[in-house]
Image 1 (cartoon, rainbow, N blue to C red):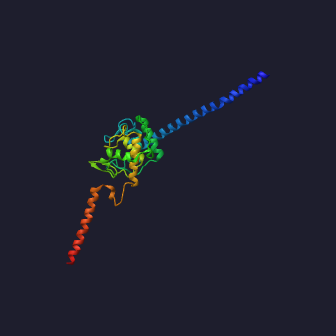
Image 2: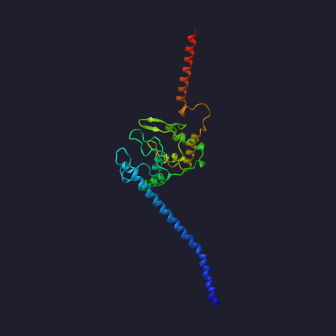
Image 3: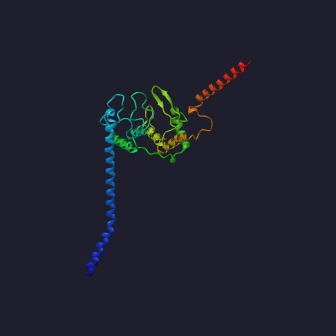
Length: 258
């Protein structure tokens, strides 16, 4: 009887010790299953949205050719990052067949729809990664230096943007989100080159995004009317026009009295 009780006690103790591990493993398996199902649901939702809003121009297969020679294949534009960028900034769906597609607009898709479409296209073309950016980890001074080297020639040191000739424009950066900056650097929209690796690693991207964000807050404005932030030449031109105009009016007034 004593041996039987000892044996039963040992079995009970062993079962008690193994139960948490087994339960934990089961919980982990269930969590993984839920995540997998959620991912599949997201992809299915993205596929539905693609068929409803994108297939007429980009074709039935995102990785295949588009339906029009002027419409790029989604296999060549930058994967999930490119889709996320154009949808969040309202550049797609294209509002008109006339005018530059690079122009920002009001987003047509909400956050969950944008994510689903981005991941669906990204999975289809083999590039479903989305960048992460944290301006709190960036160095604004280093970001300013990197921006001066790589971005200022087109966008201007103050981020006001400019026309580059033809149908190409460098849009203003004074109202962009940090993620916009990171995604544009990764995909190189329009005639913009791709910036990856070297100085443009995660720390470099965070720093550039932090500097661009500082343009939005106007941290570098030391006074005066910026007149659109277009730089000293147009601002000087406006000053001369106003100044000369005022002098002419004063001269006419004085001349009329004599």
